[in-house]
Length: 207
Image (cartoon, rainbow, N blue to C red; front, side):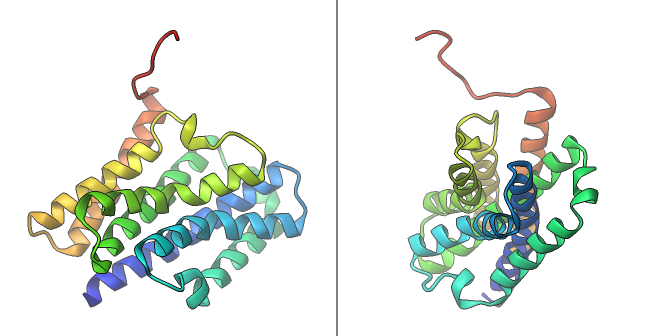
């Protein structure tokens, strides 16, 4: 149990830093001032985790109970704002890879944490998905645009797939660390590959 808590903490904090930076970049691209940058960094970094913790009964959420979460989100957002010139030079593929990494980290954290609160395998995978995409949905709503999970080729599906791999791996007796690496790797690879090769979920051609 202690090992699982450590994995969740590390994945949560790493994902928090990645998504806080992404939130800050999105805020600056949207023309927001410093306060807006800080608010969006906080929302993107912690939104998914807060929703997950409320749904599984882990209250108060870590973002409220553990000072490291908001401190890391605000610090990352502030540093991204200060070094905005450097952030502006980041290429689109690199930003996509960072986003995929954050998605994978949060998908792992959510799917790994939920069973500790008596949540079944299927719902645990959904909790991983919510953790991964929740902050991005909040970001897009605050920026008044259609949430990316509704228009991206493979986004929420990648988080769900990562959660499935993690849960199945644990069922087959793999260690929490091995399952987390497999699940996170599956999510990351699927997301990057979907963007690289233009993979999409099936759609109705004409309605």
